[in-house]
Picture 1 (cartoon, rainbow, N blue to C red):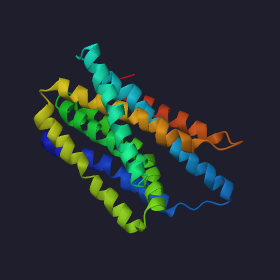
Picture 2: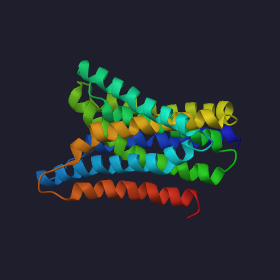
Picture 3: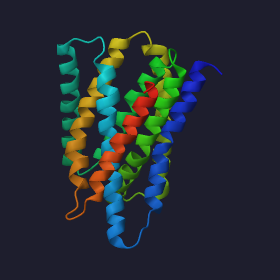
Picture 4: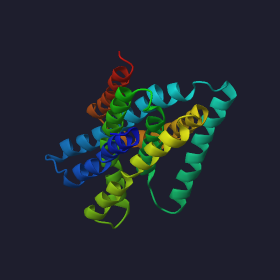
Length: 239
């Protein structure tokens, strides 16, 4: 199988974790109610931890390679400012989509990076795809719940939309392979831009939803999410 077909397949499978998380959210019914609340907050926290791991272990370390300090600072700050502007625009329109934006902001640059680097290390690309899938399940869960509360769309339409979003994986993965494999500076800039935006969204939209009074399990979800990302990072780098 050619490289581009393999990239398309593994990025599609990673992207399908988004509708899988959405399907879990649509079917999730837990009793008693206090346990249901802790579970939901735990999943939100897990997604935040996984995103933080992506920023700290993948996007920033890979993004700073070969770039000057000024370029790194500009790309990272630009991402945060751009996502703040988008968040404010969504708030003005009464459309809370922070979780969805965070999910796509993580998925797209990692798919680009996977496609650009797959030719040099197929095994690392496959493990990175597994990390992306691991992140996409809780992100799909959280984004579905956010959209289901804020819109009138039913579960079938939302899960269908998330399934279509999974096609972004092959599109950007293959594009990264053909267009950016010889442009590492551009890939680095994209990853840093995304990292700045994701870090803004973690503290603006995700972290405030995690806390429950007199409950200590949800913060452990954030630890578990970061740990999952750390394990994946170590597997990629042979730790």
